[in-house]
Image (cartoon, rainbow, N blue to C red):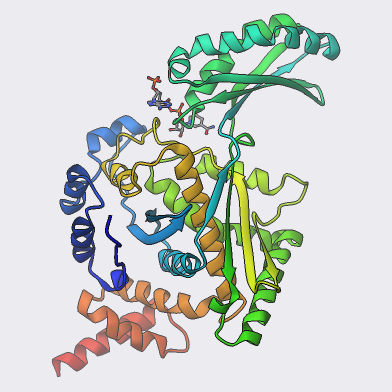
Length: 426
Ligand code: NDP
């Protein structure tokens, strides 16, 4: 493929961006048609996806271009309503690309199901009985969902833990390209009669766990500090502050929460664009962030003075899917997968974690240098201009006027818009 030139993408209109994507040949004809004709989710399909449907809620679908991940350039679809998120991601991607981009590692990709038993009187005996039947139980789980076995997946391991009064049986399952909630739930429920018999206890519940510790993914990047500032001394100073910002999120949960929120600005946007269950991803990651008893930042940055580089790395559970759930139902989700080059679940997981790390870099860089508000205020002014009813041609001049105001709010935006219109009339 020829080298794609994304310079000026942010300044184009949506129609011009769609045209550019066509010129670049990034989509197949069906996806291109969905974009050009703004095909949305048909209401009759939405009505099958959830209950009591009356309409749909649309959200902005953007592209953060040219993310270099494992040596390959990706254009990342992002669904978000928050101003500055896509701009920050694109900016970070550009800087990180200059230092070699992201490297990702998928440590494993299995989901974990659990059966919680209670009223077990002899834990030791129950555990021994269950563990001696491990192969039989794994086979039983597979028989409950034979299609995943045909696809090369299925139940892989079984172990037991006693927690207070509960005897908990955990089963890891290779769910291939699916997230696997329904298939794991089916498997766990199929195990309960045998587990009750073997443990002489009762089942409280049998269900997938969203704490997907067998689906850990790492993204990392090494950035030359010259991109922080052209001045060597200032770059050194900013690199130290970046590392301190990452340390702060390790020791202060108030900061860690906001640190991770910034990471999820990116992660959720790509998870949503690809039709995945973002609550599942959030739940697993936040649990992982508190795995040592305190909620901490998910990413960590270090500074190597000898090579004048900062190194960022982030590991979290990323049980993402490319099949199943509502993925095949929503036309725009199809565009997202196509735009990414239809990656498999492991490749997609690496992209999502890379985007989270890029978002984190952009936030920490802004926070420890100019502050976050400088960039935000312009976008806030734009939102206010739109809320005040400014037409496309009025947005630019109104934003400029708003930025000169001491306090920006909707009332100011409306009164400035009025004076702009009056000035035009007279
Ligand atoms: P599905 O129930 O849709 O199952 C996945 C489907 O994908 C299977 O029917 C399978 O078909 C098909 N498939 C096609 N190709 C592949 C492939 N290569 N690898 C694997 N499967 C393939 O979805 P999940 O079981 O993944 O469950 C995810 C859904 O469950 C999400 O919508 C989520 O919101 C929801 N959910 C989440 C919960 C949670 O997070 N705790 C709880 C309950 C629901 P076949 O059978 O032919 O193999």
